[in-house]
Amino acid sequence: MLCRPGSATRARVAQNGPVGLDLYVGPLTRYHLGDWLTVVQQIGRDVGMTVVVDRHGPEPQDSITDPDQMLYQMLAVVRRWQTGLGQALGCLADWPEEASLPYWTDKPDWDGYGGLLLLAAYDERPDLRPDPSDSTGRQPVNDQPRAYQEAPAYQAASAQPQRYPSLLRGAEWWLPMPDRPPLVFTAPRPTGQRTPMAALAASSQNYACSANAAKPSPYTTRKQCPPLGRQPATRRSR
Image 1 (cartoon, helix red, strand yellow):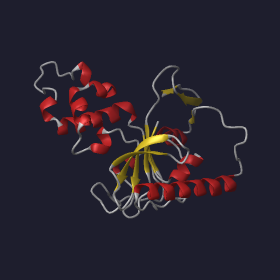
Image 2 (cartoon, rainbow, N blue to C red):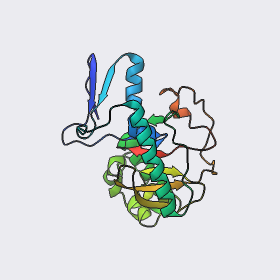
Image 3 (cartoon, one colour):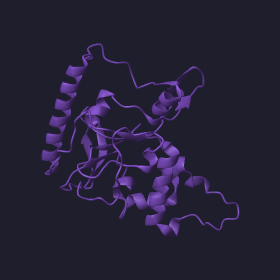
Image 4 (tube, rainbow, N blue to C red):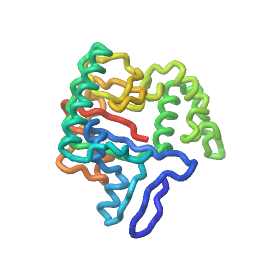
């Protein structure tokens, strides 16, 4: 994502360049309504700089513009999708989807995401971890975060993941479900695109911590996470 300085900064994807990577944790209803800001937009708002994100494609001419009607219809679409997903997987899929619920977002971008996948791969296949005693102090060319697919450790670990299957099998959405379905599966989104997804057991608090959900700040989000209890959906936004 390219950000050009000025009184009004326009964040956009460079022509023929890679799409930036953001993380979003919160209701899918709110996500699809567009009622959320990326961490870059939040920081821009706080310092008085306008940041505009160019989305893929123009809005359809028949788009609904009334906020109340949009909220009602989107909530109905997501609820129907939840019901269908739960029936297909044979489990309960009823996490909260009120659009007024808080959300969290951050931007690890592809360097952070690729680095995480490499760490998971090294943990699964320590025999293929680069030698830290390399006198150059540099990672091998094929072990760069943005080229993680080329790393021998990733290739071996993703073929038969044991400890981090959702990461190494390419999940893009993580959904809170108390009855665990197959850990990684492919299903359509509420908008129809088939997407790799993973289930998070709502009863598992392995990675949970307390946070003040009143008004999340982009400066404290990295040290906080959603409060315990029923968890909204998690997705990787590209």
